[in-house]
Length: 148
Image (cartoon, rainbow, N blue to C red):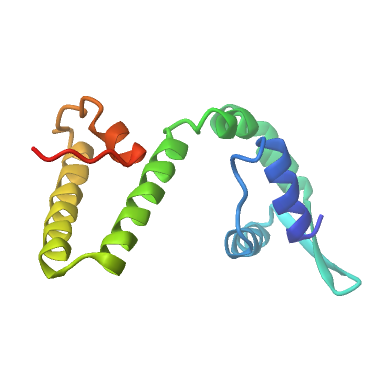
């Protein structure tokens, strides 16, 4: 398949949950080619990718390690990446709104919240996770903002 076909197929197989960009597919194909796992050939001006014998062997030998990508994608991934991306996207929209319409004090307050959030995310990785919120995210997502 060529890169666009791979993007389409991944989107279909994952139920639309996972659709990599060309900026992710083509470098990945080049890396796999460098590792001898994929062969790239020209066909009518398009680069077609196919697994080499070494690539097929790798997939077979590492099946347990590779998991089931379509199942993983449809359930949000082994690490819950889907939910994390969704939350990050919602946060980015809120930041953009503050940047467009907020006054200087609101922008400064948002910057402070983001700095605290960044620190807390790193604490999660360090194993010192703060307790999950009790629904505050749901209120923010619905647009209901309460002061407190």
